[in-house]
Image (cartoon, rainbow, N blue to C red):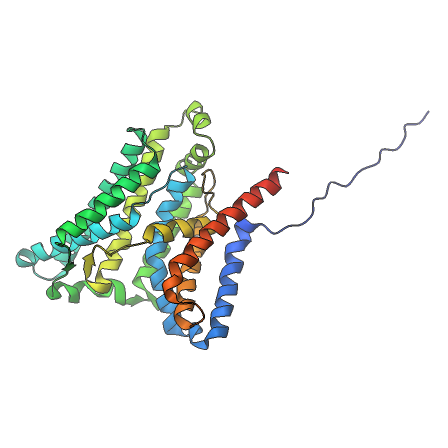
Length: 336
């Protein structure tokens, strides 16, 4: 007796939009269309250049935050860290003026101080979290208050201002361009490329994702969890210092209000870009789009009277909530 023919059943799954991959890009395109419709000046060369330059600060910090969040951590201190680094940079450069003059040497000394402070602050956050066994939320909440208090103390409750003799030398770091693009945008591009390679093409990046997915399993897999997690905070501190270096020449000053809400914007950029808040998956490309989206929203609010630009923080908060909700919905759909 011949075997009965086997009926093949279809295993095709319905097509769906990958929110993590396509969502941020689509959202940015829609925002640009809305911005142009509200005011054609949105698409002007000057406005686009300004938008990209302003995106650079938060974007650079958000690249560092991508590593921290991918590894299952969080850093709430980045805005306060930027403030105190800015203040110390200005103090160091003003103090070096008499010895080295207002030239490039003084600026390089200030930049060196920024990098050392950023690495040190990141290392402190990392060690307190890993070796101190304190929750990252608590550690960075505490250092956020410490850093903000320090810059207020250094400024004596006022503002620290860079000496005008130095501003002429330092000013081009923010205001000059190279091949048609502002220097901050080039710095953002370099940091993004290095961050993408580190996260997606090295063992360190794989370790970050493994730790964020399941820290216990990562330990059993012979991954030095404490070292890797500490390094993510060091990278975050380095990114904050780089952002500060290109931010200080913009205004030439620092105060207790410097960097306010930057932690919210950095985390929002990371989450909008598709990095999972609970860790285990990170996207540098998405983070770049997230930073552009946030800056574009603020830029659009400046072009219209429909919504006050004072509500920019409200918009950012809503975006974080919606982005996390979409992540949970996507996770549940894949699980089902």
